[in-house]
Image 1: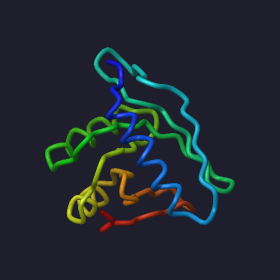
Image 2: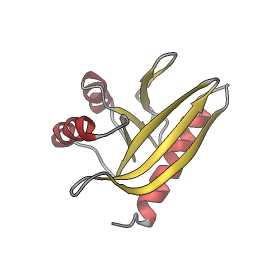
Image 3: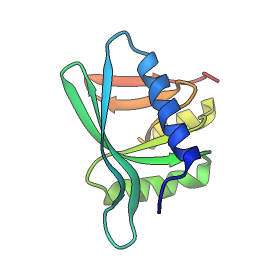
Length: 129
């Protein structure tokens, strides 16, 4: 399953928006693309995010849109993965941002909305368009 141009565009725009929210540099390194975890589970990317002296690895799922039905799928996926899921999406509205946070699903979007909970890195931004 190869990533399409739209998914790459969403990924690049969401990471740029995330980085633009900080006065401190945030760096990332793509460790793998289209990583196969087992016979039925793939992730779009494995990414290492570095902020100050901290680093976190994420299994990235890129989606054009997010809806409530995805939450259960993401929770189940999270249980199978070696690293936390990072949902990268075009836009997360206020209600969905609260739902994702409540279910401990970390995300970033192209508008700069984000939920990352890896102390000391804690980010929760919602309401950006």
